[in-house]
Picture 1 (cartoon, rainbow, N blue to C red):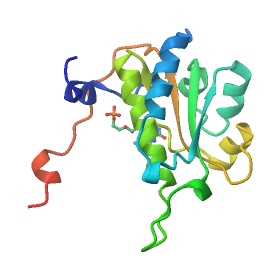
Picture 2 (cartoon, rainbow, N blue to C red):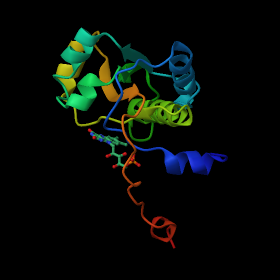
Picture 3 (spheres, rainbow, N blue to C red):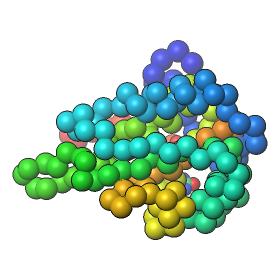
Length: 169
Ligand SMILES: Cc1cc2nc3c(=O)[nH]c(=O)nc-3n(C[C@H](O)[C@H](O)[C@H](O)COP(=O)(O)O)c2cc1C
């Protein structure tokens, strides 16, 4: 893997994990990558919650009851406080979720570079996740990902729309 494009093309959503925990220095590396993500007005309106304890992961899996999510060695939740985010004056758009997405994307790409698997989880029950993570008032879970070593070779990369389709003529 030599270029950023190689990394972007090879990163896969991983839905099977080995139980071994991630080495602390690699965990730190992917969290650092998230920390350096850009955010609107540099507000950084998020916290990263790493859940490694088996019982806590089991409690969190109530919000997304898939075995591969429950059994991954770690889950990272990107939690946002919308009242701390930049709000665009013209239309009131709150950038908390955009900022969270950038942090998650940095984390996922750094994890792929380190040979680790992730899978953005968006289809979770937000109330159940906030409760399991004991988030204070005003905080919400923007996204979660399991984190660990992939258990199996990934299926072929799902295709993307051709560039010609994405470009506005
Ligand atoms: C915002 C967002 C939410 C997603 N939510 C889920 C999810 O709840 N469950 C899941 O298995 N994958 C989820 N995914 C993963 C996508 O299905 C996956 O990124 C897409 O199919 C492309 O595959 P790739 O990541 O392997 O390139 C989500 C991805 C994004 C960006």
